Structures are given as structure tokens and as C-alpha cells.
Length: 183
Length: 189
Picture 1 (spheres, rainbow over the protein chains, first blue to last red):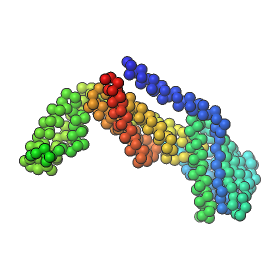
Picture 2: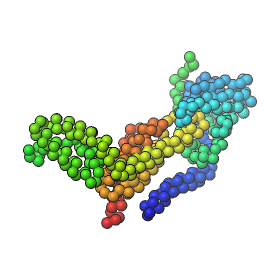
Picture 3: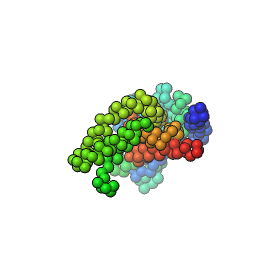
Picture 4: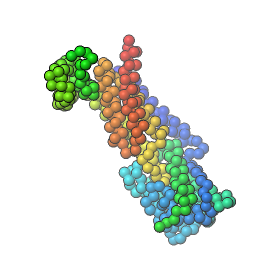
């Protein structure tokens, strides 16, 4: 009986402590916010193509299956959707709907993202000319999850999202500096 | 045949036999088989002896397992194996959920922190399992069950498991289970 009590206490501690930790971490100032940047040896105009044209975006954002073009045409209010392959969900495809809220080539692009019943957020791309043919790209993303469990797990999701974004930006840098072109 | 040149049966097969022959028959079964093995080695050579020993152990294992399940001796080990595998699978599903909520999606490679949590849970579960053992043989069997449960959990997981993680999981499961048993025994003395 003593052992049963001990086991129940250990299991309860294993559940309660992480939940409390996650709840506390969820209250931090940068919750649900991801920021990542990269300096690329290219002009803002050259780099703009890689964030504006869906066919280019597909090449550096991993797990993108399809990136539809802006509808009707690029500009504030235009929409485009990305089809992502979700390996963690049995390879299911997920459609992320995007609506452009700011379009200032080659300086800034802001897109409101939404996946019904999963999350909605805002992603902004800032391009800064550093001179000598170099450009700094800063991507910021704020998101809010619909499900309570996902909101609880946010302190784990955000670092994973940042890591993924860093990987994507490293790929973008390598592609742009390698002067990759679409075939 | 002197003690230095006496042949020994394959260690893994002997360990399997000891693990599954049960508290009551352990020494008897292993001893009889060992005697016959020595005779055969002397008469027909070590190769034939080892092949015979292996075939005897492999043929006996299903019956021994069935007997242990019927007597209830293996029930605890099977329960431990299932619990360890289930806890790793549950954690894998949780990490899949987390990665699935990365807005731009991510692959099956897990950050070291997630794998460390898996190992911590595995250690705690294995230590609890080991603490339930009442004899050294039962503790060895439970540690084997913990390692088998860890392997089953890793194999059934969706996520990619690096080699270091598999090695660490097997080591952690076995060591924690034995540590749990040693701790309980030490406290009871």
C-alpha cells in the first residue's frame, strides 16, 4: 500500500509540476512571438523575390508542398495560401491561409495567417539595406492558438518554431548567395 | 578437463535461460543443461556443444515463458514492459502535437530537450519498476523488461531516434531499474 501511494505521488508530481511550469512560462513577455534574422549578400530587390514569389518561397521554407500565387495580384488585401506537409500528423497536408496586410516592396511585407481551429497570427518580413550589396531580413511572427492544450504547450512550440525559422533562413541565405535560380 | 579449459555456454543464451526459468527451477534447469553441455563438448567438440545448447534454450524458451506467465512470475515484467513502452509512446505523441503546432510545420527530428525529458521519464519509471522486485533475479528480469519496453517505445515512435539516444535509453532503463532495486534492498536492511 505504501508503494502504491508513492507511485501515485510520483505520477502526480510528474503531471502537475510540468503543467505548472508550462503555465508560468506561458506568462512570459515573449510568449507566442518568434523573431529571426539573417544578413544576405544580395540587394533588397533580389531578396524580395524570395519572399514574395510563391515558387521561390517553396524552395527555402521546408515542408512546403505548394505556395499559391497572390490572388488577385500582390498588394494589400490579396490572399495566398500555403500547403504544408505535416510529418508529425501522419504526413497530412495543412493549408495556411494568408492575407496581405502590408505590401511595400522591397522593404516590408506583412501577412495575416490563419488555419481554422488551429492558430492565427501575423508574420512580417522587414528588409533593410546594409549597403555594399547586403540586406538584413528580419522575420517576426506572433501567433495565437485556438486549442487550450496548444496554448499550454506554447513554451515548447515557440522555441521549436524559432529553430525551424532559423533553419529556413540559413537555407534562404545559402540559396540566394549561391545565386540559385528557378528552373 | 580443468577449470581453465572448461568450455562455457554462450553468455546471452545462459542469461536468457536464467531469466526465464523461474525462481524455483532456475538452478536446476541451468545446471542440468550445463552438465550435458560439458559432456557433449568433451565427446563431440565445443562447436557441437554450443549449437546443441543454443537449440535447447531456443526450444525451451516458449514453454518457459508460458510457464512463467501461468505462474504469474512474468506478469509483472510484461506489465513493466507495456508501461515503459506506453509512456514513451505517449511522450512521442505529445512531441508530435507540439511540432504539429509549429506554424510553418517541422519534421520528425526532436530537439535534445525533448529527448532528455523522455530519458528522465524513462529513468523514473524504470526505477519504480526496479523497486518492485523482490529478488536479484526478479530485478534482472525487470531491468531486461525495462530495456525491452524502452526499445519497443522507441521503435513504435514516429520521431527520428539518433543512435546516442537509443543507447542512452537502453542504459538508463537498465541502470535505473537496478538502482531502484538496490535502493529498496538497502533501505529494507
